[in-house]
Image 1: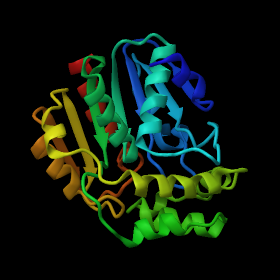
Image 2 (image 1 turned 60 degrees about the vertical axis):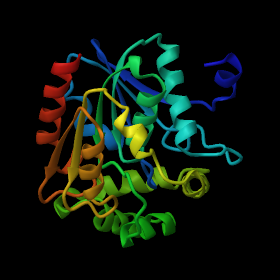
Image 3 (image 1 turned 30 degrees about the vertical axis):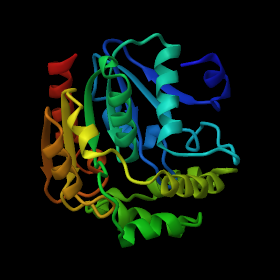
Length: 265
């Protein structure tokens, strides 16, 4: 990455904990998202590894410039900068939703640096749904955030506690956060479809695909199609589980990822 590119990158907030082979966690794109909130039940379970969990630009404690072109290209640059700054030559990338698209971009750009991919709730084909409309139309309030979480992300409604709703609402209502989210939705629409079938077929990195069968944001068929194109991808569909499989089914998801990490690090 050039010095000019590094200097132009907005400020990143990165959780960097643990020792051992590096694992980069990339969250998705929705109001109130942060690395800690997205991966809170995973980070402590992946002992024996160095965990890097950034807030992507536009989210959490990272910068939220109003005049920035948001999208997968920006977040891929951010991910490489995080690794380059720490002089990490190899990493397993865990990408959730949009983070999975970024992870795939990394594997296509510099496959020798990617020891493995774990892709959660990955979108392969455009689709429209009530859940996606709710995400785009969200305006910060506690009531709207609770509705969003219940309708979009989980099947187990007991997960939706007042503390979870308040945490995500507060992140979504920070200065500049809602404006950045609208710019992000515009940037994602402009970015168009993700990777081509040919690109996916060229990814020979060991890959673990996980998807909730009842995902209302990204239909599970996306991961089924993805598994058919990726030569070294294993797929697990989780019954009774929505978009937040890493939260709803944390025990199983963490066990599958831990076993995968043992095999490829």
